Image: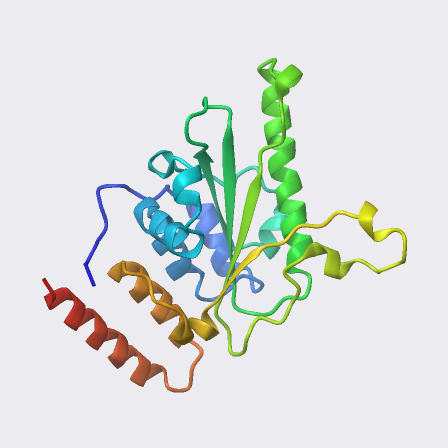
Length: 235
């Protein structure tokens, strides 16, 4: 396994008020600092995306990924979300053709996760619509796609719906008129059963996140260390 470590890219700055809000909010995952510290690193985020959703390599210009600040999210959404948002141009297009990737961190199987994500996506679209309006681009404006990804590491598997339609009462003849979309789920309770990422740093972050809620956390940490030690010595 080849080792790749951080480049000179620097994480986006976080204000003191944002950090304090995350510390004070009981609804925020307690392991949020590891999640944010890891995936505010654009190199590591790109490695995650290429491992989890490999088709994006051909579709998106990952070298031009931008981490978005969350200042446009309202206070109510901030109480629900421990998120990171990225803006990535589509290959071979101009600067106004891009995709957003929403990375959501969960340590509990929240049944209403997809409703929360819908509200966030609508906020993104409202912001982009407003920008197009201000810049006089509405004549050819289209809403940008948003790729929602849930990263979950809790005491049990993630059992909440990952399709919005599962939250809507099913009435025959009406369902085709309802809003629906699906999120990509990375459930780290099953991390041992998946092909691990080749990137050593990404493997370490995901393995540590998986181990946090396990009774055998100490033993798992030793195994993670041994794997990293062996990999770092390989040619």
